[in-house]
Amino acid sequence: MSLAAIYNTFDGEELLEGSIAQIVDQVDEVLIVYQLQSNIGEYYPELLTTLAAIKQRWQKVRLRKYEPDLNLTPSNNERMKRQIGLDWAMELGCTHYLFLDNDEYYDTQAFAAAKAKLELGEYDASACRLYTYFKQPTYRLQPMENYWVPFMGRLKTGMKAGGKFPVLVDPTRGVKPIERCYLFAEHELMMHHFSYVRKDIGRKLRNSSAARNFGNIAQKVEQFNAWQPGQPLVHFSNYGIVEVPDLFDLNS
Image (cartoon, rainbow, N blue to C red; front, side, top):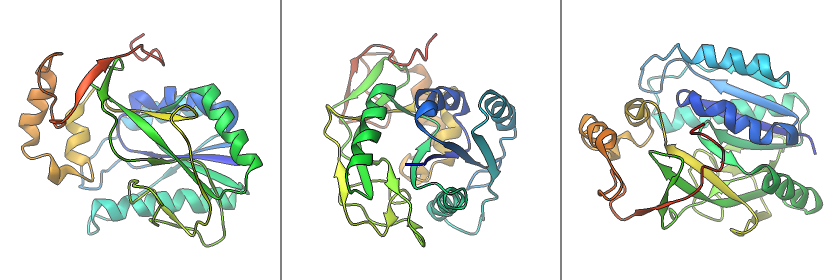
């Protein structure tokens, strides 16, 4: 197996280096498809400083800039960006790929065991469940959100981003064609999603593909910044939190 970790990057870059560090010894290429202008036109050139430092740290990191088409929906731009990563991995001779965002972490040992399982099996796709964290890396949503995240898959000629999975996933992260998909049990593999652990939650919400679901974003940001444990969660009205260890030392 020759594995490419394909990162889709715009903001939340404070989490990117830690995400890569968890898996870098298990992958052959780290492909970062980044954009300095969001899918709605907001610029964030400060990202370049972080990317330069990451590339200097690891030789296997490669960078490619994406220019969004503001005439397209954010979701279509996301699909195009992921397609660039798939095609790039194929060009480099990789046999397998894994889509990631900056805020997605995997336990190193669990990742290695999952990779070994897929190497032995005849699977061309896989998926796992995820934990979502809120404001601090020690506050985790309870119960788990009711969807999955695609994990490693086999690269195929003509593969397209945006296909359906046998379980509910982000539609921009599905691929086609797939035939045999392995679904990891929770004890085997979990993705740790630090989706709401950000130095600038406003930038995330404004530029999210799901921004239309957030209502008054300025109000949401104010509520989020003022939130304390015991208060209702912002944007997660049907969830509570459980306090857990800082597994990846994000507060250090």
